[in-house]
Image 1 (cartoon, rainbow, N blue to C red):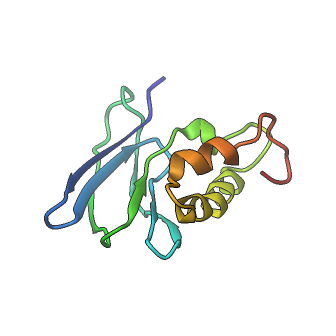
Image 2 (cartoon, helix red, strand yellow; image 1 turned 120 degrees about the horizontal axis):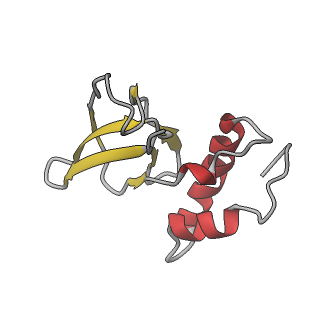
Length: 121
């Protein structure tokens, strides 16, 4: 059994971010206009499994964008597909960022219900 991880190195001068992931859901970018997109990073094996290499990807982040790194427990549940969890977060992050003083922590804290329903967030 291994641990999941996203590793990111950000250069604020060039706004480039080099990332790799090890069995973890992909990070998301919330653009200044509120668009949310999950980055297409190659999925490496979880840490500790061994035997396979990790591939990194470099992306340029637009000024004012937010890189969202989150725990897999936020989007995964035994009773629903992970795509449902990703869509749930993607629907809440832009509105939390748009509020005065808002950030993803606000959207995450208010966006995750205590009991995860099977059909919606």
